[in-house]
Length: 106
Image (cartoon, rainbow, N blue to C red; front, side, top):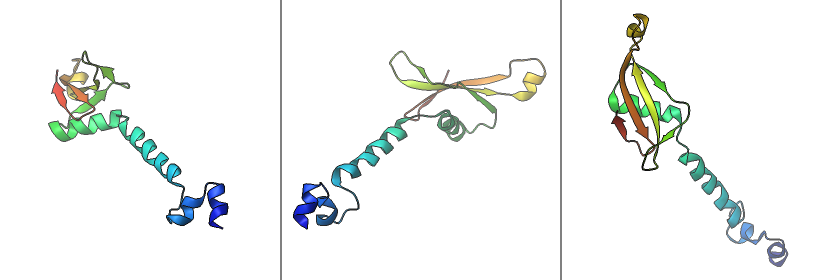
């Protein structure tokens, strides 16, 4: 029986007790790591709220920009809605939020 399973590539199921062959178990980890590397606008907004403690209305670019040094960042603007209603642009502050969690005031 062991010889039969090793011929068709399923020996790892029974020898190691794993639920999937060894090479198949590595794939989800790689996929999860690639998915985690994607930096979303939502994460950038949360980073600004957490680090800067602002309750202002936040506006963010849909796609990240790239700095001169090649690092991706989202530009986030803190806005005051009452100033906008009065005809002002309402801009309180502009931030650059980098994937590594840095928030720089522009």
